[in-house]
Image (cartoon, rainbow, N blue to C red; front, side):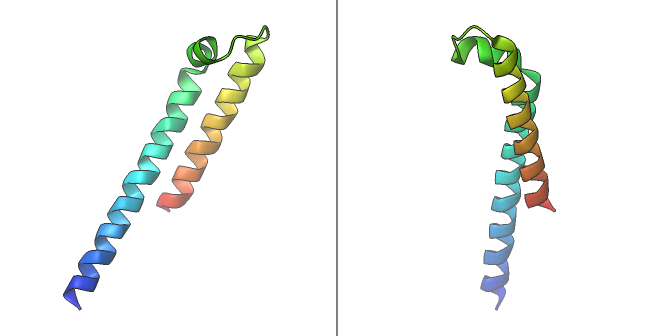
Length: 69
């Protein structure tokens, strides 16, 4: 009985850590979108790549927050 409780607690903590990493990845995508789009993409319209990375970062942050809740 006690071992089951410890296992469930560890699973809960691991899920929280993974969700926090997802949130942080989303925040990095939002704040460094222009730098990342310069490094990763070489096509002409950099504004579209930046907007896409910001949207992706926002989605990552929301998904991580939902997992934590």
